[in-house]
Image 1 (cartoon, rainbow, N blue to C red):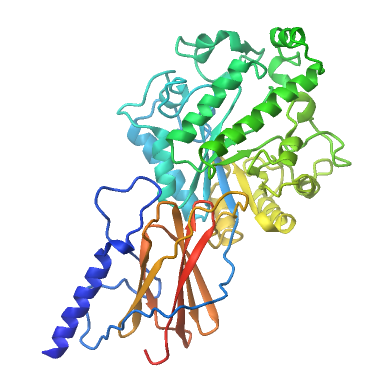
Image 2: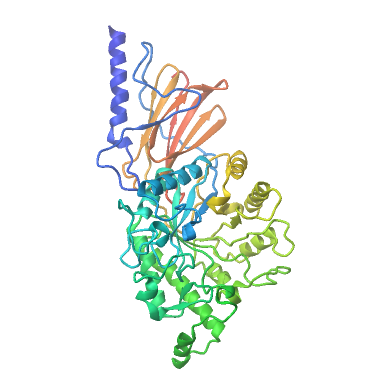
Length: 538
C-alpha cells in the first residue's frame, strides 16, 4: 500500500510540474491565449517519459546548490538562404496560387532549411515597389496574385506567416527589400495601382523596360524610409536586408547614363559643388546612414544588412578585375563598412576559389581588412550557378575558407533556395552543417536577456527528468542544455518551446554529473546559467 501511494505521489508531481506556469516561457512571437503543455525533447536512446510509473522509482528533491562551471563553447555560424519572390524565382512558384498552396510551399521551404541546420532566411517582401504583406503605402505584388494591388484570397498576410513559421522552426527572418526598383520587366502591365502612376515625378523608365526611383529625389528617400520603418514597427522580424541594386546596372539602360537630369539641375541650382558621380554616391551614402540610424532608434535588435556586388573597384585589391560598383552603381560599399552603418555585410563573392581575377579568398580578406567596426562579414555564395565541375565541393570549400578567414563571426548566405537541391543539401548536412549552430553574437547591440532560468531535476530508476523555464522569456529564442557525463560534455541547442527533457543516468559507462540550462536571446547572446550537480549515490 505504501509503495502504491508513493507511485501516485510521483505521478501527481510529474503532471503538476508539467503544468506549472513557471516552466512555460513566453515566446517572442504572439503566444496562444492558453498556456501550452511542456514539450519533452525525445532522445534517440530513450523513450519519452509516460505516466506509467514503475513501483520502485524514487523521486529526489531539487538541488539548489549554486554551481560555478566553465561551459564548453557552442557552435556559432550564420547559415542563411535567400528566398526570391521577384519573377517567382523561389516563392511562390507561380503567381495566382491559392492561399493554401502558397502556405504549403512556404512550409516546405522552411522545413527544408530547418532539417538541414540553417538558422536564417532572407525573404524578399518588396521586390519592386510592391508588397508581399499588408501595406497602405504600396500595392500588393503582381508576383503574389497575378494582379497588382490584389490581396490574396482567402486573405492572409504572407510576411506575418513567413515570420511566425520561421520563428517556430528556430530560424531568423530577415526582410529583403529593393530600395529603388519601381517596376520589374516581368511584373505585368503598369496599372493604376502601380507606384509608377502614383509617384510619376520620382520614377524614370529604363531602356530594358524597368522603372527606377530617382535616388537623388528627397521624396524617394522619404518614401523608402517610410516603407522600411513601417515593416520594422509592425512585424516581429530579425533583420532588414538590401541587395546590390542602388543606381541600376548600366546595361539596364542600354549603356546610357541614368536619366536624372532634373535632379542634377536642382542640385546645381542649390549651390551643390560635388561632381555628378560623387553627388550620386552621396545620395546613396546618406540614405544608407539614415536607414541604419532609424532602425536602431526604433528597434535596436533588428539587424541591418547589405549584400553589395563583391568587387568595390577593379584593381582593389591588386589583381582583381570586374565591374566597379563604385563607378557604375554609385555604391561606396567600402564606406558603409568603414563607418559601421550596417550590422552585417554580405558581399556577393560569386566566383570560384581559384578564379584568377576574382579570387574568393583575396576578396574576402580585403573586405575583412576594411571592417573597422568588426561588423559581421558573411559573404554571399553562388550556390545556384557557381562555375565549378563539382558545385557542392566548391561551396563546401568556400564555407571552410570563410571559417578560417573570419573565425570570430563565421557565416554565409546562399543564393538562393534554388541551389539547395538534394545533392547540395546532403553535402552540407553531412559536412559543415552536420550540427546545429547559433547565430554569432552582435556585441555592439544591447543583450535582451539577463535573467537566470529555473531548473529542476526529478529522478526515476533509470533516468532524470529535467524541467526549466523563465519568468519573462519574451526575447528568448533558444535554450542551451549542457550535460556532463564524467568529463564529457554534451551540448544541445533547443527551441524556446522545449522546456523539458529526459536524461539518461549513464552513457558509455559514465554517470551524469552536471546539468546546466541557459537562455539565448534573439541576438544570440546567452543569459545567466542555472546548474545542478548530481551527487554521488542519488
